[in-house]
Image 1: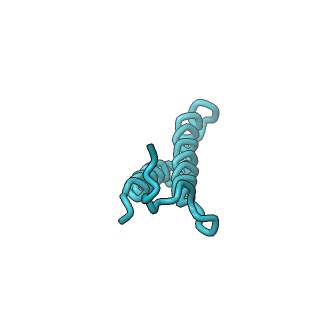
Image 2: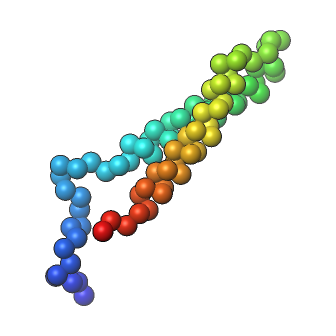
Length: 81
């Protein structure tokens, strides 16, 4: 049984976009960080050199993406009043 007095719409208004951009940014940043970690491990196997500093700096993007995903989860889980 539905409640006709419920003011909440079932779909978001057409003028507002969902806040999924933060999730997509978090996934992208996390993926780049994971690729840098894989490259760090593959560099000594495939070449005789050591990984560059840019790979180590890129690997630090993985935890940044994780934190962004946590922020997205906390923001999207809040109830609106």
